[in-house]
Length: 241
Image (cartoon, rainbow, N blue to C red; front, side, top):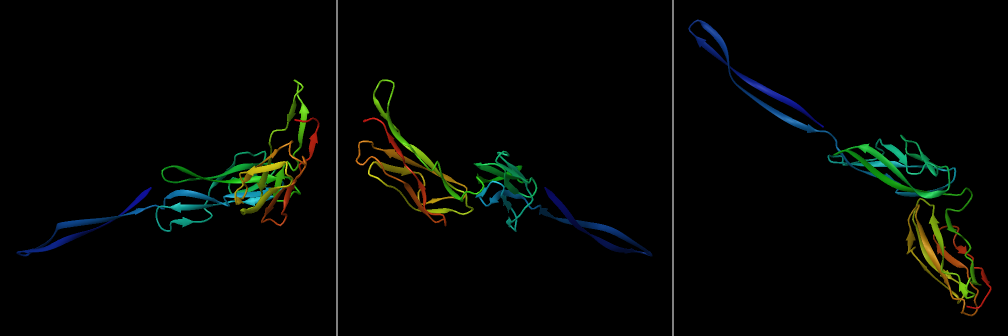
């Protein structure tokens, strides 16, 4: 949206002719300047990812990037929405999100009018059960078994998966992920850190021919005060593979 202001001037000439005096406008000139409105071009939501327990509230805020100085403005007015209101509700005008269920990550969206139209910024919120720690492994027990199938052959468990969820508002540094017992091995998608409100998976494989065929647990050492987190690996071996 643009607004225009104008400025002009005129020049007059005094003419003396005989006994008469007259004023004549002989020239005019105008100049104008254009002022451009402060135009919003992008929105960023803070925090970009967060976690909370069921019943807790997380305040989100929107930062706007503008085409004209000052180019950055915090706590701009926005319309807020949650992608899953059964897990997290949000005050549409203030950005305060409340975990009403367990799950996620839920997408939190801030919308505002900008250039060329409506602009959006997003963040993620994960909601954990009340009374649980901010970092958890679900499930926290993986069972392995060999059993006879319908053909009478011995069939053993495929690799099992547990999910590590970081419900903190900051990144979780991963120091190590290990598994006890020569019969077990693990691979994971966690890397060296897990972002706020994010998850990664740990896949555990079992070799029933290894001796001994028991072992565990899976142990995750990280930067949270509840470290280490563990997953037990009970084995129920009922036949020989």
